[in-house]
Image 1 (tube, rainbow, N blue to C red):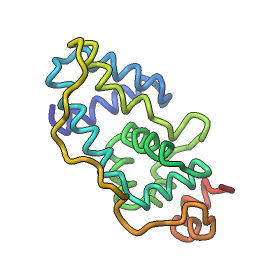
Image 2 (cartoon, rainbow, N blue to C red):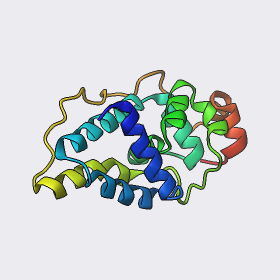
Image 3 (tube, helix red, strand yellow):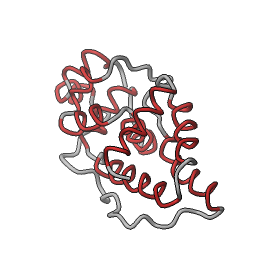
Image 4 (tube, rainbow, N blue to C red):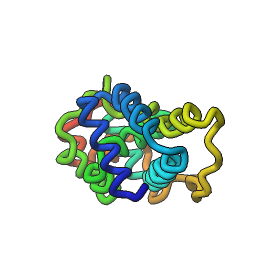
Length: 174
């Protein structure tokens, strides 16, 4: 599976799920079950590589604005959700997290921002196909600390200054 096929699978299942992250994950598992185990592992490698790329302080700050705060786990699930939003949103957010203000049509913190199940879709499909746990993917692990300059995720003034568009559109109290 190449990168284009990866993103097409993400996009088509998100569209079929009408943006619901839980339905998206279920549909993704169903589609992955139609592939051979090696293709499922290829998908997992693409997903994990993007998940690790998104371990960046500025994205964590953007997640904190959108979610009204973001713990370690919340940021992990946010990164999965962000991948699930497709290539344009994911790459745009990596380049400039404040652009999420224009890249996202809407954001409902009750249903958006938590893509935990998306992060497990490939593992679940692989196990259903083979009866065994997926092997190590052989890609570089996530860095020990997020990349970039650390942010105080509790400082509303700092977040509003760093992400002015995002704060204006989606900000509130942490």
